[in-house]
Length: 226
Ligand SMILES: Nc1nc2c(ncn2[C@@H]2O[C@H](COP(=O)(O)OP(=O)(O)OP(=O)(O)O)[C@@H](O)[C@H]2O)c(=O)[nH]1
Ligand SMILES: Nc1ncnc2c1ncn2[C@H]1C[C@H](O)[C@@H](COP(=O)(O)OP(=O)(O)O)O1
Image (cartoon, rainbow, N blue to C red; front, side, top):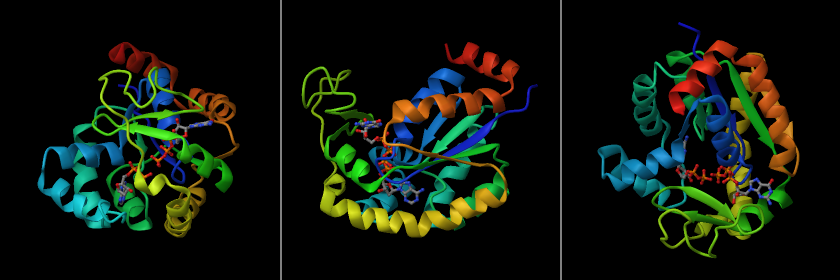
């Protein structure tokens, strides 16, 4: 059995983690697990973790580490026979250490995007809450403004995507992300990408993963996902 591939993508709100993760999933057949989407699923299903997490997210706060770890690690056990890409987890050093005790990562991608670019992107971001599908009026607009392409349901904007809320979120992101980035740099698996356009970053991410993912594994996974 070819060795499975484990990756994490890190980056501030609006940096393009979700956008790049979707491209990685379709190009390399990795399973994309977004902590935000998984939380929304648990909130919608009113699971114990979902009910608890909702109380924090409604206040615009991070969900406590022990709640996130207790939610994410069992999900990763279910995915143990797949190669995967984690998006939005780990977000703190405690989460990274919990993840490292459960599995070994091959690559950590870190997106380093200028503040003004993040503000501009999030100002134009529209989301379909139920599915987590993400649009941007400048970058990937829906066919009909304000309407989800698949379900036809209305799109919304997150309150904390507004520029005034973003500065606080970014400062908090930087504080909690730095030790995580330092940890993976020390492990020699960190790959940092800086640009203002995802389409300019994508070729580098794609060639990094092409070099790192064993070809027989990538072929096998593409076969199972198509
Ligand atoms: N203009 C522009 N918008 C982009 C680009 N890449 C992504 N976007 C849009 O910018 C917004 C943020 O991208 P996401 O992929 O949601 O970023 P994220 O890191 O997952 O964001 P969070 O979920 O908030 O952490 C979305 O509306 C994207 O469609 C780009 O290169 N240019
Ligand atoms: N790894 C994690 N640790 C703590 N809270 C998390 C988390 N991942 C997601 N959350 C919480 C806080 C986020 O604001 C919320 C929604 O997550 P998201 O969809 O990734 O959006 P964003 O992080 O851009 O706010 O869920």
